[in-house]
Amino acid sequence: MDMLRKYIEELIDKSTPARPIWNIEKILQGKEPTWNYIDGCMIKALLEMYAITKGEKYLAFADDFISYHVREDGQINHYDIHELNIDNVNAGKVLFELYELTGKEKYRKAIDTVYEQVKIQPRTKEGNFWHKKIYPNQVWLDGLYMGQPFYMEYETKFNNKKNYKDIFNQFANVEKIMKDSKTGLYYHGYDSSREASWCDKVTGLSKNFWLRALGWYVMALLDTLEKMDSTYTEGYTQLSNNFKDIMKAIIKFQDESGMWYQVVDQGNREGNYLETSGSAIMAYGILKGVRMGFLPESYRAYGEKAFKGICDKYLYEKDGELCLGGICLVAGLGRPDSRDGTFEYYISEPVVENEAKGVAPLLLAYTEILRL
Image (tube, rainbow, N blue to C red; front, top):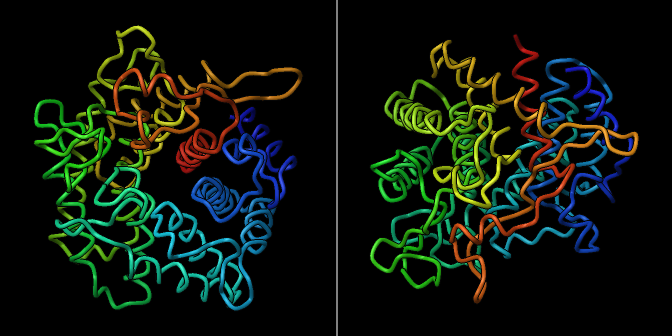
């Protein structure tokens, strides 16, 4: 536990808003970080650390980091809502909390800036947000996490809950279309048009169950539930039941180590590996689900086992510094002749160290343990 806190603080000390050390994607691309979901995940985790420990270092860093991107008029540097990338909504979640903690009016204005994208995001014929403009008619599990909790918090706080039904419907569509009846798991993506090269031309579904996509879905449900008015009983029950069902399904695939495999249901297949980011998300989801009363107390052991398994296997010292390994850098669907959703594709993506998509959820799981 102390080792993990030391590790997080080392990452903070080595990072600036212009070059966060955990954004390996941008570093490898040689690009300056812009408004993106990866940093949003990390800043959210740091704000959770502040909420529990009251360590001013976490709040100060989060405030400085987001303030670097947000101008006084609420516009956000290098963020174009017309790019219509649902990933870009994710970082907007931290604006609510920073506005409440700092009172900076520019954060309130920036919330409206991000909401403008929500208002114009294209939709499939079923009514779900496209994942991105460059991926027309596609719904990915990732996108539920990127967009829906922000959408729900805005509706709850600033729009008199007018679009609650829309949010519930988007989750309902995903359950109806993307859930596998045999395993209870969800496929990574769905193409409403059936035109994408990676999809089944009958069902529109991708081929496999990718761990981190399932994790994004788990967090989407939990974080959306956390931000909604629970007196909307029908919708609250719908989302909580979805959460319970997916956790019941995912537990069946937990490895003896406590972790889960990159391709969840094919753990014995050559090349598959125990992956950090998705396993950390599941640890967080289980522990938070128990705390919020959605899962029985007996599930806590699964979450703690997952957290310990990650630290035992992938948190280590290297050249005198702490590292977190076993993190799939990125995986998606699309592009000509690549990212085809096959098993071979998912295990082919680079595995890296100290990347926010693994660090942030492990830190979130840690905050749930601290709450005990």
